[in-house]
Length: 254
Image (cartoon, rainbow, N blue to C red; front, top):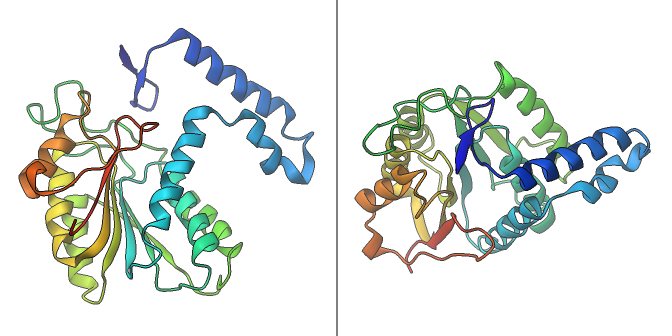
């Protein structure tokens, strides 16, 4: 059973998980000032299993592109958790690779162009929205994260606001030099996923990684539909980690 929360995000309805999340949140809020300068480290005491598994997942995937040239594209940024993690992972594994630019694409206004047939009637335009002008706050935070890494004088990330069906094509046109080492598709719905896949396909090289956040997922059928139409499920080898049930990835050329 799923329900939409106040941000119009689909969440599994479970009394225990809701109580667990509320308890850990309250614990952190009530102790964060007591933890002093090491608050970030001590906040790990409230880090939930699902969040840890996602960190491990992206850590494993990032290591696979260390020997592959090119940039990273994330389609579907929302609050920016994955972008922040990617900046940190680049600082860990490739501290001096200033060519590993990270691009984040999002409307920052929620879904656009939802399709009642491809995506389902339960998803609507405006779902998964963030606060107004949040992208400016996120930009500043990501700058702070990047300043904590080597070569911080070189900006190595960009936020691109707008309809991904349009901005992905414009990005390809504006960046004729770019190779895509990693592309993350976390838009959940059919049309922008299909259009972004089509737009960047010519910029992939053998070893590039395509990451999908909602494949084989009944609640978000559009992402699988888009992948099947553009690349064909029979033409790529999809990989899966057991602790990320709705996520899959493929290495281009395998």
